[in-house]
Amino acid sequence: VLDVSGKEIEMRVECSSGTYIRQLSNDITRKLGIESYLTNLVRESIGEITMENCTAMNELESSDWQNKLISQ
Image (tube, rainbow, N blue to C red):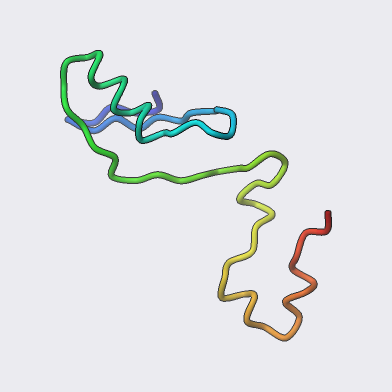
């Protein structure tokens, strides 16, 4: 849990692929005996790919879009 403000809770979850964060949220609040919904969900990384080395979709419209791709 990163922050609690009024009725809002901000949290960070590190999980494996296949984890359903919306369901995790539902499970946690069900155990607490309350109802909830997500207002924001951000995937910060997938394996070695992080937000810092990602490219925005509008940047792929440039003529050098191939230089912005990550090679495998």
